[in-house]
Length: 372
Image (tube, rainbow, N blue to C red; front, side):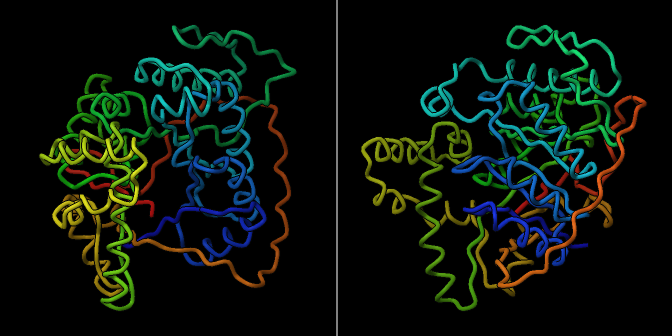
């Protein structure tokens, strides 16, 4: 069964309701936001209000600029509004962005992110079960929660926490504590097979977990068009974006696996000098083929499947092969009446186990789950 995700990429929040309804009507399974030039949570509030079935997630929100308490409130309210459809995707970003863009201190990200996830769950458990909040770690301490600040329990309290990971240490952490692993679009099939999956499985084994509990979530670079000329033009255009990622030290392990580390170092020097226009020319056709799915509209589904060789081991009902879907803003869309709010439950139930989904999982031979 072919199922679709889409990225909710808007410049104005008033565009969200119509796009979200269009996505749901088109059969899209989930909408994802990212933390780039806009806040990733605000669009999901509107999307939750104007849809009934879509899963809604951040891919990803940067963790460290927000305390676990701030993120816990955001996620809890979105879970309530969406009636359990919210997925929290978190990432560390790189040191420069934390220190120089967000103005937050930087340290070893793995132990801090582990505590972050554990703190979130401790806070949510306190709200759901009415128990005292006592979380004390090396990086975060949450020991105060009075009734005035407690939002109370939810009928659907399990919020999946998924982590973005490139290097093996973060992949192991995802295997230990996360409900999913977001693979960066700057990846290759070989990197998933040889680096990401083995590290994820190792982390899961350390924690006594089944790796199948940790699905992979990813998007892919796709070059497509109606005609060969359009495909060729798009192919040239994507080189610049790939070169940007290849110039970043955080993504260097992907290049190293393929023996392209020197290209990455050269690109890093060009980026530091501001010579952006020259960078795309350093990417060879071989590199492009490794990172990008290229084909016409008719060719694209088959070529996406060919890039996911791990699919055959997954039962048919759990397969998710997704093509990119670009949401178009309709000229006129009737506004759906807002749903009545659910009455607040006065009883507190324990946080439920992770819900069963049809996502492909990272077991012995698990595919990635594109969210294009």
